[in-house]
Image 1 (cartoon, rainbow, N blue to C red):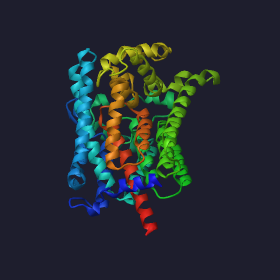
Image 2: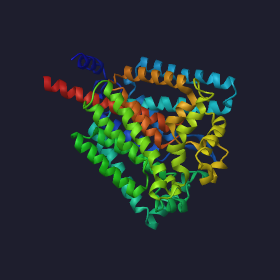
Image 3: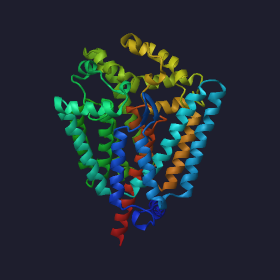
Image 4: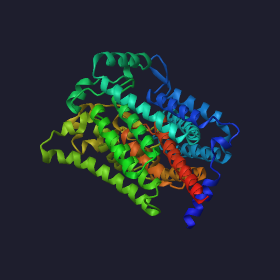
Length: 450
C-alpha cells in the first residue's frame, strides 16, 4: 500500500496536453513523433561535399520545434538536471585528457554531439508524453507496415532502383552500403536497405517500432508478447537482421515490469537475467559453431557479429587494466584501437577477418553503445552518469526506473556511437514509454475508484 501511495503522488503532477497553455493536441504530438522517427530512420543530416557537418539535423530540429510548441511542459528542475549531466560528462573527460588518452578535437566533436543528442532526447520526451497513445500505435504501425512491405518489394528491381536513387541523392557515396556479396555469403540474400543508408538501420528501425507498438497497444500480456514475437520473426525473415531479437526482449521485459507483473527488486533481477541470457546465447552461438559443424565465418556474419556483440565486452575487459575508474575518455577511439586488436587477437578473430586486422579507425572496431559507454567513462564515471540520469527520470515521475535503463542496455547491443543522436533518443524514448503507460494506468485506477 505504501508503494502505491508513493506512485500516486509521483503521478499526480504529470503534465497532460489538455492542462497546458502552450501545447499541441495529443494527435498533433503523435504525428510529430512519427515525423521525427522518419527523420531519424533516414538519418537526415547536413553534409558539405563528403564531410558530415551536423548529424541527425532533421531529427534534432523536429524535436526542438516540438518542445517549443509544448513549452509549458518543460520544468526548470528538468533543465537543471540535464545541465548537471552535461557538465558531468565534460568533467569526467578531464582525467583522460590530462593523461593523453583522448585527442581534444575528438573529444569536443563527440561532446558537442552528445550535448545536442541529450537536449533533443529530452525535447522528444516532452512531445511523446503529450501524445495520444492510440494515435501513436496507429501511426507507428503504418510506418512499420511500410518498412516491412517496402523491404519485401525491394527484392524486385524497380523498387530497388527507386530506393537506391533516393539513397544516392541524400547520402555521400562513401557512406552507402554496397556489400551485396557479403550479404549473400553471410545471410543468404541481399539485405534490404529501403530508403536507408545501410541494412542494419532497417532492422534497428523496425525493432524500435515493434517496441513502441507492442508496449503501447491495449491488450493482455500474451497478446503483446505473442504479437511482438510474430512480427519480429517476419521482420527477421525479410530483413535478415537478427538484432531485432534485442527489441523483442525489450517488449517482454516491458510487459513484465510496466504492467505490474513483477515488482520491487525483481524488476532489476529480471532485467539482468534477460541481458545475461541474450549475451550467453550469443557467445554459445559462436562456440557451438565448431560442435555443430557450421562455418564460424558464416555464424560471425562477415565480422559484424564480432564488433557488435562478441568483441565489445572483450575490449572493455582490456580497458579495465589501466582505465578502470574514469575510462579512456569520450571519443578516444585512437586509444581504443590497440585494445581492440589485442582483444580480438586472443580469439583468432584477426585471422578470420583480415579487414579487422587492417582497420586503422577504432570507431569501426566496436559497434555497441553499451560497452562504449563503460569503456569511455569507466566504472566510476559511468556510475555517476547513470545516477544523474536516474535522478532526472525520478524527477519526471517515473516509478519503474529499471525499465528505461535495461531497455536501453538491450537496444545498445545493436549499434554503436554512444555520443551520437540515436542512443540518447532511444533512452528518452523508453523513459517516455514508461511515463505514458504509468500515467494511463494511474488514470484508469482513479476512474475505477471513482
